[in-house]
Image (cartoon, one colour):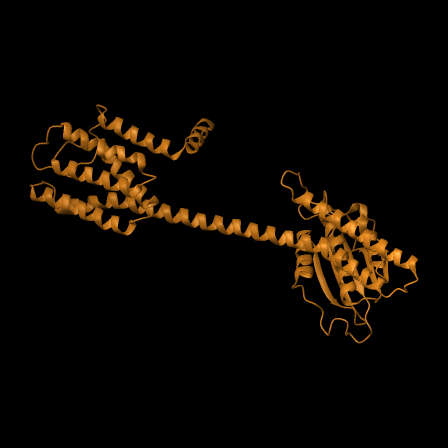
Length: 396
C-alpha cells in the first residue's frame, strides 16, 4: 500500500460514522442511476419481458440504497427496509439495478452490528426470500428452483461474514478489556507497594521511638528530647517520601524509573533511623553504590527498608546486620540478617513466606529489576532477607 493510499484510508477511518454511512448510501444511489453502470445488478429471473422502469421502480431503487445511511446506527431497520424493497423490486420484474448491492451491504452490516432482534431477523429474511422465489416460480420464471437455492448462498455468505467479523470484534474487545483490567490491577498493586514501602517503615520506627520514650525516667529530660527529636525527624522523612511518591504519581510529571525514587546512597539514613529506635544495627557496605542501575538502587533500598521494618516489629532489641556486597563481579547482594536466640523461635518455627504486602511486594519489585529474592532462617534461629540484583537493569 502506497503512503498516499495509507493516508487516505486513515483519513476515511477518522471520519464520523454518520458521514461514512451517508457516503456509502450516496455512492450506491448515484451509481444506481448512472448510465452504463445502473443495470449491473442482481436479477432473480422474470418470466416474460422486463417491466419498464417507472416512478415505482425509481422509488424502490432509492429504498434499497438510502437506508444504508443508518446501517451502523440501526442495522436491523436498514436490513428490513433494503430487503423489502429488493424483494418487491425483483417480484415486480424490473431490470437489474446496481441498487441490489445495498442488500449485501445491509446483510453484512446486520451480521456485524445488529444487537437487538438478531435471532428474529434471520428467519424473517429467509421467509421473505422464499416468498419472493415462490412468486417468481409461480409466475413462470425460466430458472429452475435449484438456481434460487444456489443464489441463496450469496446473501447468506454476506451475513455469515458479518457474523464472523462480529465474533472477531467481540473477542478483540474481550482481550482489550482483559489487558486494561490487568494494567489497572498492576497499577493498583504498584501503588499499594509504594505506599506500604514508604509508610510502614517510618510509622513502625515512630511507634517504637514513642514506646521507648514511655520508659525513660521522668527527670531525664535530655533523653526524652532526643527521643522526641528522633520521632520528629522520622515524621519529616515520611512526609518527604510521601511527597516524592505523589510527585511520581502526578500525570504531568515526566517519570523515569529511578529518577525521583530513593537511591542506594541513602541506606545509611535508614540504618541511622532504625538505630534511633534503640535497635542495634550494623551496616557493612563492601560494594560502591555508584555503578548500580536506578531500578536496582530502588530495589536494594526497599530490601533494606523491609528487613529493618520486620526486625523492629518482630525482633526488637535483636542484633541486625545490613550488608551490601558484590556477587561474582556482575551483580549485587543485599542482605538484612536479624539475630535469633539460638532456638529458631524468632519466627515461630517457620520463615514468613512472601504472601503479604511486604515480602510479596518486595519480591515483585526485585523481579522487575531483574533480580531474585529469598527469605529464610539464619543459622542462630534469626531471619535473613537476601536479594541478588544485576548491576544494570534487564534490557539496558
